[in-house]
Image (tube, rainbow over all chains, first blue to last red):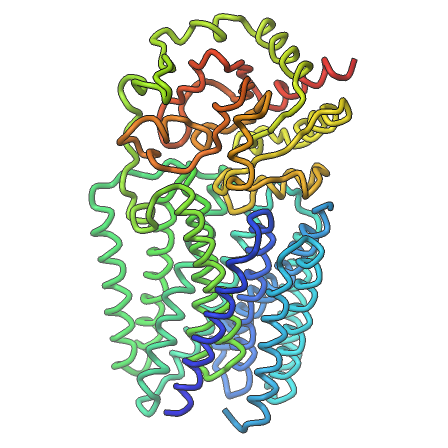
Length: 91
Length: 474
């Protein structure tokens, strides 16, 4: 039970802190912000990796492997495109 | 949670992620923040691999490399005009991964598992599936592969409710049955989330796209966070929550900038049909809506209009350029940037005013102009520059209609009434480089086209803007 409280606490805390921080991101950076957070949402790859830590059926391996391909695409592509856009902005 | 040391390490990684976001204030900060978060991500990956034994390391490594290389190559090679679609697809890929992971997790569920974990896994599956299908549809719309006109079905809401009910039913069934039927029930549940996402996204069209994209962004984060609760992984929860927050903020900012609420956009509350008859009265009682569209400036044929426009620019000391989705469609950003450079080399004050929902995703115009080497500091947000139009000699509208439509202020009961606009009509002269005089997405006729201070250069924005430069090149 304490686990679920801890997890909900982490969810609430990071939501509030990120809300406060992201509210101050200027509009000019909204596209890079979106692709940046997009890349972070690929964190689901951790869940995909954990699927492979226990006995898995063939179907589970296929689905899990596909999940890793998709998440890695999102992860690497997201950080790459964010970096590319951020470099483009000249000051 | 195994022990407090692991938790502590996780919290440090989460703090580094937050530190990455905190740097997103300036372009150089965004660069550093991006690298910071990428490092945090690498640490999170390393921790999971270090703490667990991966049963099929080669398969896992190979699938990772395939996805990573594809993601990298496409991100480095794609042209900037196609970035909205790529971002939508990346978002969809993340949602799809969450969908698949929760599918496998749910397939392993036994009666002994706690209901809470199952509930969150189901929630992750629902949001992930909607994010995947919704993003694919959004990407197709952004690439003009499918029409952005929302289909009109009277039973649309019913359809959404039925799909949701199908998901709930199949999900509940998958928990109660065992054996070979269970994967079938799960598959039906997954397919219903995909259908739901596609149906939702199909209904949102045109200028409402920025809201849809932002919302799907939030969904893919929430899917990861829900999955984190289901699997008891703090880093998943925290990172997912960050993305959920960010997507929520963007969604609200976009909806507010259109003076619409998110619900009405998603439920397809209809934009009024193109109003019969032009808006009646102008702000200062000026006869804005002249019955005869061919009057005054419009009567001056194209060559005359071009001469007038060049003359106005030659005599101007201050110019504000207002880009819209039409600039993206015509890919006129390089011509626009060249025009700005010419004018500022001639000693004029040149600035860009960008409406928050100009384009098809948050920040769309800024990315295009940055690609064309426009200085970051020359890009102004609406509130920072709106009061300056009144003291500006020439405003140049490039492919924008709704976001500069004075009817939003002067005419009541239109779909855009009350929407904050860039007040280009307050400038001494307005040069309009739009394709034609048809209304924007909202269907509300734009009184700017009848305003005597407007100079209308209808046609392809790329050519119109280039023809303006021609004069200054001499």
